[in-house]
Length: 118
Image (cartoon, rainbow, N blue to C red):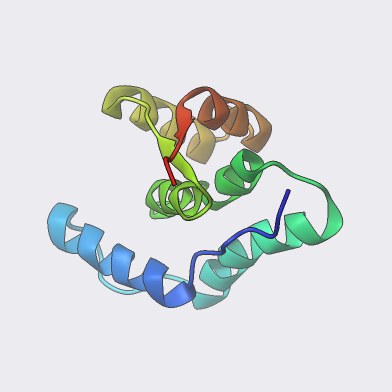
Protein backbone atom coordinates (compact mmCIF):
# COMPACT_ATOMS: atom_id res chain seq x y z
CA UNK A 1 0.00 0.00 0.00
CA UNK A 2 1.30 3.45 -0.84
CA UNK A 3 1.54 6.01 1.95
CA UNK A 4 -1.98 7.05 2.96
CA UNK A 5 -3.29 10.57 2.80
CA UNK A 6 -4.16 11.43 6.40
CA UNK A 7 -7.11 13.53 7.51
CA UNK A 8 -5.86 16.81 8.97
CA UNK A 9 -6.73 17.71 12.55
CA UNK A 10 -8.13 21.06 11.40
CA UNK A 11 -10.41 19.28 8.91
CA UNK A 12 -11.79 17.01 11.63
CA UNK A 13 -12.43 19.99 13.91
CA UNK A 14 -14.24 21.84 11.10
CA UNK A 15 -16.33 18.75 10.27
CA UNK A 16 -17.16 18.33 13.95
CA UNK A 17 -18.43 21.91 14.16
CA UNK A 18 -20.52 21.44 11.00
CA UNK A 19 -22.08 18.24 12.34
CA UNK A 20 -22.86 19.94 15.65
CA UNK A 21 -24.54 22.80 13.78
CA UNK A 22 -26.63 20.33 11.78
CA UNK A 23 -27.51 17.76 14.43
CA UNK A 24 -26.88 19.42 17.77
CA UNK A 25 -24.76 18.43 20.71
CA UNK A 26 -22.34 20.01 23.13
CA UNK A 27 -19.93 22.42 21.48
CA UNK A 28 -16.19 21.90 21.67
CA UNK A 29 -14.21 18.83 22.60
CA UNK A 30 -14.78 16.92 25.80
CA UNK A 31 -11.16 15.75 25.98
CA UNK A 32 -8.48 17.16 23.66
CA UNK A 33 -6.05 14.40 24.64
CA UNK A 34 -8.51 11.67 23.65
CA UNK A 35 -9.26 13.52 20.42
CA UNK A 36 -5.59 13.71 19.49
CA UNK A 37 -5.09 10.09 20.50
CA UNK A 38 -7.97 9.01 18.24
CA UNK A 39 -6.43 10.89 15.31
CA UNK A 40 -3.04 9.31 15.98
CA UNK A 41 -4.41 5.76 16.14
CA UNK A 42 -4.43 5.13 12.35
CA UNK A 43 -0.89 6.51 11.99
CA UNK A 44 0.30 4.32 14.85
CA UNK A 45 -1.39 1.30 13.30
CA UNK A 46 0.30 2.06 9.98
CA UNK A 47 3.70 2.45 11.65
CA UNK A 48 3.63 -0.93 13.38
CA UNK A 49 1.47 -3.12 11.12
CA UNK A 50 0.53 -3.40 7.45
CA UNK A 51 -3.17 -2.49 7.56
CA UNK A 52 -5.44 -2.01 4.57
CA UNK A 53 -6.91 1.40 3.86
CA UNK A 54 -10.18 -0.01 5.25
CA UNK A 55 -8.54 -1.03 8.53
CA UNK A 56 -7.13 2.49 8.83
CA UNK A 57 -10.55 4.01 8.10
CA UNK A 58 -12.07 1.68 10.68
CA UNK A 59 -9.61 2.89 13.28
CA UNK A 60 -10.83 6.45 12.66
CA UNK A 61 -14.50 5.47 12.95
CA UNK A 62 -14.67 4.65 16.63
CA UNK A 63 -16.04 7.94 17.96
CA UNK A 64 -18.86 10.43 17.39
CA UNK A 65 -17.22 12.25 14.47
CA UNK A 66 -15.42 9.07 13.45
CA UNK A 67 -17.80 7.86 10.75
CA UNK A 68 -17.48 11.11 8.82
CA UNK A 69 -13.70 11.04 9.22
CA UNK A 70 -13.53 7.40 8.09
CA UNK A 71 -15.55 8.20 4.97
CA UNK A 72 -13.37 11.25 4.27
CA UNK A 73 -10.19 9.19 4.78
CA UNK A 74 -11.43 6.62 2.27
CA UNK A 75 -12.23 9.38 -0.22
CA UNK A 76 -8.79 10.95 0.19
CA UNK A 77 -7.31 7.54 -0.57
CA UNK A 78 -9.34 6.74 -3.67
CA UNK A 79 -12.46 5.02 -2.29
CA UNK A 80 -16.13 5.97 -1.97
CA UNK A 81 -18.25 4.57 0.85
CA UNK A 82 -21.44 3.27 -0.75
CA UNK A 83 -23.32 1.88 2.23
CA UNK A 84 -26.89 2.90 2.87
CA UNK A 85 -27.61 5.29 5.72
CA UNK A 86 -29.40 2.73 7.91
CA UNK A 87 -26.66 0.13 7.51
CA UNK A 88 -23.97 2.74 8.24
CA UNK A 89 -25.76 3.78 11.43
CA UNK A 90 -26.15 0.18 12.63
CA UNK A 91 -22.53 -0.71 11.90
CA UNK A 92 -21.06 2.48 13.38
CA UNK A 93 -23.16 2.28 16.54
CA UNK A 94 -22.13 -1.35 16.86
CA UNK A 95 -18.47 -0.34 16.64
CA UNK A 96 -18.91 2.47 19.17
CA UNK A 97 -20.71 0.12 21.58
CA UNK A 98 -18.07 -2.58 21.23
CA UNK A 99 -20.54 -5.03 19.68
CA UNK A 100 -18.25 -5.33 16.65
CA UNK A 101 -14.51 -4.82 16.48
CA UNK A 102 -12.43 -2.65 14.19
CA UNK A 103 -11.50 -5.66 12.03
CA UNK A 104 -15.18 -6.45 11.43
CA UNK A 105 -15.88 -2.80 10.74
CA UNK A 106 -13.00 -2.73 8.24
CA UNK A 107 -14.50 -5.80 6.53
CA UNK A 108 -17.83 -3.99 6.32
CA UNK A 109 -16.10 -0.90 4.87
CA UNK A 110 -14.37 -3.10 2.28
CA UNK A 111 -17.65 -4.68 1.22
CA UNK A 112 -19.40 -1.30 1.02
CA UNK A 113 -16.82 0.79 -0.82
CA UNK A 114 -16.02 1.33 -4.48
CA UNK A 115 -12.96 2.76 -6.23
CA UNK A 116 -13.21 6.41 -7.21
CA UNK A 117 -12.54 7.18 -10.85
CA UNK A 118 -9.33 9.17 -11.18
